[in-house]
Image (tube, rainbow, N blue to C red):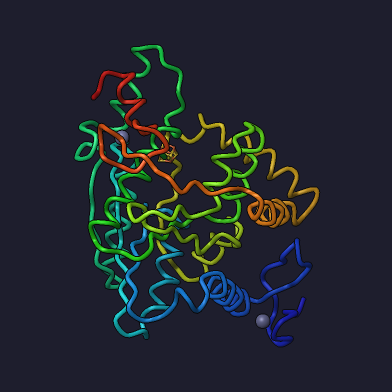
Length: 304
Ligand code: SF4
Ligand code: ZN
Ligand code: ZN
């Protein structure tokens, strides 16, 4: 089959939701253009500093690869890597090693910090402690909350204008569905809108319109070396159940994940954004009440 875009080369990829057959070159060009359009001219410009949350997985490294390419020719722009070691034995160190190799290869400055430094213990310890205390909580729920806080702090300390996160289309569709199912409208609004508060660095999700399998294909074609093993806690997550349902739907009805996102973006215009933020009395982070979710959890475990 000949590529539908260049009409010259043999196609290597069939994009089910659009019905297009693309060759490697046109596929790469399509992703680069789409991500550039997602960011827009108001973000890809000079005098800007972007902190990127990097884990070593395909999403964060593809995002870093693209941002490096976009910002390289722009004067006075800077991108830096922000790496958080959660303390997951036998898993995270490998991802961090691959992130460091990537940053050194592409000449991206990076900063590393750990859960231990910020909350005084590793994620593994928190999981053990919650088992001992019979607190049934999914590791991902507090890992995500603590990591977000740390990344925000790192971006603030480094005077970044934006914090870029490598969430792909699948991640966002899953997040939207999880909040719908749980009926959590507040979290749904937070997922899609930036809180206008100087203590929060505005977030960017450059890959939000690129499905996970296309991020992987991009990484493979471009020879980006990334950490392939899944986190040992990921299979326990509610997200993985929702992901399975969405994958089945997408298989039978191509385009489902895109339509979840576009419906969500339309809905966002009707959802209010919280303007007033409190300060957590334990960690000093901006929070919806006087104690943030992470500290509330750590308190229940007698860690703080
Ligand atoms: Fe943390 Fe869950 Fe991601 Fe593992 S899968 S790094 S526990 S959020
Ligand atoms: Zn082509
Ligand atoms: Zn707190």
